[in-house]
Length: 116
Image (tube, rainbow, N blue to C red; front, side, top):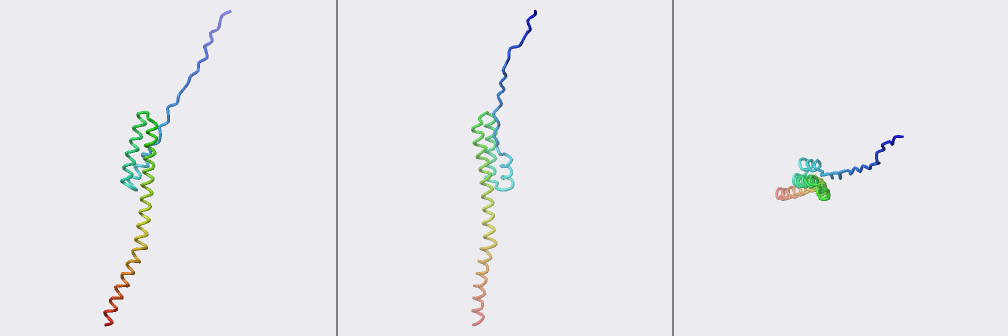
């Protein structure tokens, strides 16, 4: 009888590469071009720093800088929206009232002089 060759059982361990954290570059560019250029530019810088850290396999630093980029983008959006609301309130509510009061005072002064 002939001995049959049986391969020894082998175990293959495939280690997945750590997932690359999101750098939020798209959001940062959108904020920079459309909403708030100053905070958007800072967010782009942090996003690029996040990508660079991920290229160096420093995933913790990449994750934290990506998070800072996202926070800066969201703060830029929030500040811009609040600024627009405040400007609209000033232009459409406060300024017309001031103009109306000034016009009424001016007309009252003119009537005083015309009656004399």
